[in-house]
Image (cartoon, rainbow, N blue to C red; front, side):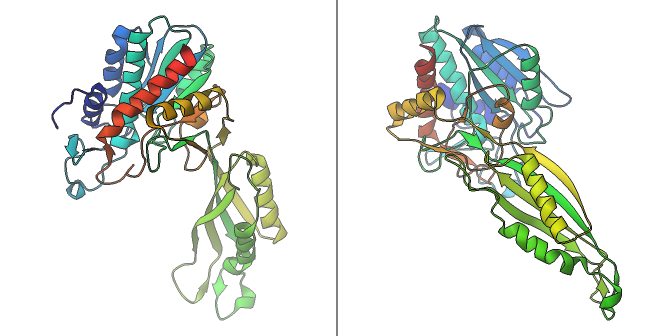
Length: 380
């Protein structure tokens, strides 16, 4: 491990990276966070669900309640021989901290932990409450993590007012992009039934590839919506197509394709399902669809939280931030069901999930300073 810095954010980030917390294994990262904040008045509630460890830390009980949310689990390393240093030995080279989870998202967790700790030290009588929701199931199936904790909090009558998810959102410089929502993800598996036969006697067969081709074209070219102020238009993509026996002289009996729709708040799950089915029916296809909802879209319009965070970014870095809803899904989709304002903000995302994942060392203290300044803007 690199020499531990005098920077508490860097030191805690290094400690977390050194834990081999490949999803869903937490490797006691959450115990470390609970210990770090114990003297600051944060009460720890450990919420294990099956193999997943979850942590709820809270200081005070008054409103408003601001939550920092994040995940201690990381994706697998990939081929170790392709890394320039051990992914679980945090290593500093040329001003960059290397290790799995450096950007996604152990640096964010370390930064908001230290931000909360120093904020409480400076303002022990701050108004409202601060909490942390930490899971080890964000990079996995997301079944026993944040979604279960949110259900627990709802049962307990906990009403959050603000939530900052520490996802790496910045693109070129720290703070240039924050996410105030995410698109939903709806996937489908369609099986088209034909009639298998010999290619020399097509009149005795029904080729499902030929039958569904016009429908595929229509699905791919349909304008599902025009998006809105915050979201781009909904998109439809065919991700896989399979038919045939492997022989060149056999008309296949069935064809199967997979697709994914990334959709905005301008459409609903039911409207999309209805429109897809209507297109298949219009082409007189004998079809079956299996649907999988990966996540519903969520949106936090401009308001107190985005303004407080944007002001903090300007104060610390001088950067004017941009609101965005691009990218894949995140645990924000679960938190948005119990919290009216959810914003994602974290470090530069250029190397997440990659070999030699890293973060600029000089961005760690500013990241913590932005989180702390946001606390000051909302809770003082």
